[in-house]
Every structure is written in C-alpha cells, then in structure tokens.
Amino acid sequence: MAAKSLIHSPLNGFKVEAFNGKFAGKDMVSIRQFTDKIEVAKVFNVAGQMEKIVKSKVNSNILKHVTMAELFYQPSTRTFTSFLSAARWLGCKRVVAIHGMEAYSSVTKGESLPDTIMSIEQTTACDIIVMRHPEDNSAFEAAHFASVPIVNGGSGKLEHPTQAVLDLYTIYRRLGTMTGLKVGMLGDLLNGRTVKSLSKILTLVDPKAKLYFISPKVLELPRNEVAELKQRGAQIVETSDLASVLPELDVLYVTRIQKEWFKTPAQQKLYNNLKGQYDINNKWLKLAKKKMIVMHPLPRVGEISYEVDDDPRAAYFEEMRMGLYTRMALLALLTGKIK
Ligand code: NCD
Image (tube, rainbow, N blue to C red; front, side, top):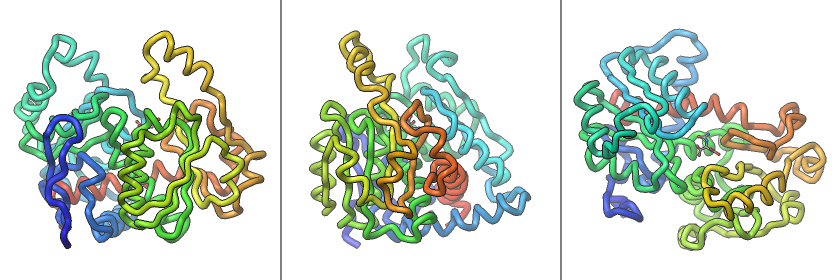
C-alpha cells in the first residue's frame, strides 16, 4: 500500500498521521487520513458489533478505563450527544463534556486553543478529546498540541470526518453497496463541511463514483475541492437544476444553507434571497427512483418537508442512529481498546 503517511492541513502546516490500517492512538482530524477502503470496512465491522451492544441494552465496559473530554465551540445536537452517549454505552464513566466553550470557558478572556487543549488534558487526565470548532485549521492545531488523540467533530467549513463515516455507513446499510452509485449533493456546497468530507470518502471507496453537485452558482463547491475529487477519479456533474438530475440519483444528500457564515449585511441579504430556494417534498420525490434514499446531516431548516419523513426513502433519522454506532466504533478503535 503506497499510501501517504502524513496528511497536511491545507492552511497552517500542521499534520496528522494517516491511518494506514491502524487507528490506535491516532487523531481523527481529516477524512483524508483514510487511505484504503479496508480501513472503512474495519470501522463498519466494529460498528456492527456496537449495534449489538446497543440492541442488547447492556453497556459494555470497553472504555471502562478511558476518560473522554468533549469540547464544543459551536452548537450541536447530534454530534455532541452521540459522542457522549457512545462513550457511556462503552462503559466510559469519566466524561467531561462541555458545550458553549466559546461563551463559558476562558476563551472569552482570550485564551488560545493550544492553551485550552493543554489545560483540559491537565485538569481531566483525559485519554481522548472530541472537539468542534469554527476555524478550518482548529482540529489540526489541537492535534499538534495535544498528547492524546483529537477527534474532529466538525471544524470550520472544510471537515466533518465522523459525519462522513456515518453518512457512508448509512448508504451502505440502506443500499447494500458503496460503489457504482450516483450521489447528488444539494444545498450550500460552498460553506457546508459535510459534503466536502463525504465526497472524499465516497471517492476512496469508489474512485469512479459519480457525484452530482447541485446548488445555486454562488454556493457551488470550491474549485480546489472539485479539482481534488477529479484527481481522485470521480466523475462530476455540477448543476443548479435539480429536476434535470434527480431521476438518475441513488442518493440525494440535502444540506441547509449555512446561515452562520453569511456575516456582512451584503451576505445576509444574499442569504435571505437564497433561503427557501429548494424544499424537497413529495412532489419532488415523484421524480426520483423508488430506491433512492434522501439523506441530510441535519439540522433542516425547510429544505425537506415533514411529509417526506413518512416516505420509505427518508434515511435521515437512521443516519443519526448510524452516528451512534460508528462513533462508538471510532472511540474504541482510536483509544486502541478494539484493534
Ligand atoms: C452539520 C455540521 O455541523 O456541519 N451538522 C451535524 O453535525 N449533523 C450540518 C449543519 O450544521 O448543517
């Protein structure tokens, strides 16, 4: 396997080790750390074991001796709770989970990210840190300064690797395959991080994946991301016309327009013009294959009508449960408790 062993931050020169078949003791900062589909298969295999634990309703003690810290500098419903609950299902009793870091920690006094990370390690004696942060380079920076693995629960506009794993697992579970698929990604491809991570892992497991990026021109996927995907072998279609591609798709991955990144008055005006542009409802689904699945990392803010929830093609609730299983698997693998 002639895989790269170091993955560099595109921004600040920090780097993390690629998995190269081994997870124990490593950070999970970038989806680019996956270098072979065998690693994906490993996570999925362990996720299957994790599902059995949850279904048995009896905690395991795999993480009995592990202390986990969770530091979230941005809002979260699913990622925060699924990591917390993943740790608990695995018997991890020592969890320090902090939401609202940006408001309630010494960050408001100007504390730097390296100082915060090193402080949390000292005060908690943790073995692993899960972090969500608004800056693109934050997870790489945290990994550089931490002596324990950093798990990226979403950083800036570029990376959300654990979401990509759970999304891919959902596709695999629902469609029984990860290859030969036509995957449409709709919404804010410029600011959203989930699409950037998912499209990369899709092209790892299927270098010839056909990806359809559907968005208004102003929200299109950045050119360097498109170039990277093409280099990985992907076939790419970019369009603003959902109707023209929807009948072909096996997966429709919907995302919200990321309001928080529209900061200036001009951007806020643009946001107001863009919001509500698409609403996946039963009428749209009439154009889609009977076996297509509709996904969304959530939160949804009007892009998928509630009526779609009752359609068997809706997979976004299942995605959340797959998030619990895959995050249990990742915690067990990264801490080296499962090899
Ligand atoms: C996403 C995120 O934080 O990037 N949420 C999530 O983790 N499920 C998607 C979003 O906020 O739109």
